[in-house]
Image (cartoon, rainbow over all chains, first blue to last red; front, side, top):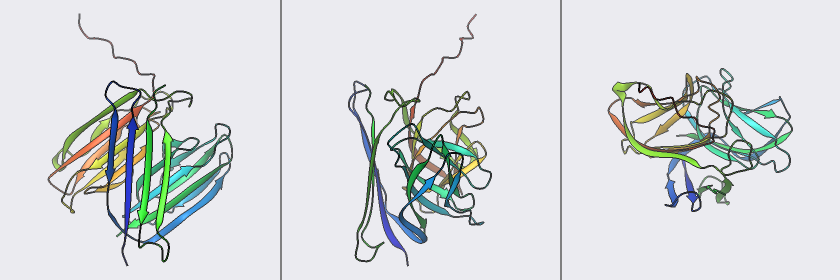
Length: 125
Length: 144
């Protein structure tokens, strides 16, 4: 059964430019299984952890993922499972909300130290 | 210091029985090196046509990994239309009508441009914002 997910992003900056940056966007997503409620995984440096497995078929899953690390400059790379192509890095406290191609998957790669990553995902209905 | 703050909230009243989902996260966007805030921003709107195939929303810096952030929203109201989002030849995922993403982008390789593509037909209005780390160097003038 499909359920409803409401993600909202707000970007705010009143210090950098003469005109403040302040915008917000929200959406209503119909989501279904497979899904994962918030969970954590510990990723050591150079080790990988699967966030969303390559399902072998096309589809979309929305992933919330956060680097919960606060000490040292440890980070995690985001990369596809299919092809292991890195496209972004989450540093301390940073998060992302990304639509994942279920035929590509998502994994994290630890950089410089052990990082605890918090994540959840929901498959688009 | 430049202080750009990104905040996300994810809620649901029917996803978990007996427990409303409420995820909240916030972070300040920092340049590469994580000591100063980002000061370069590019934002705008556009229209993407299926006929144009895959288009580069932004070229990559192509030197070393850097800290950059990307917001893209598919502003179509047609549920059949979606945007394919990729980095060079790597497909990240699809954004349906009204959907958005917020993701880091390393742009550390010349072949790391952000690609967007309209599917399966027609024209899709979109908006985007890219927050970038320096260094950015201007191209040399071709004037004689």
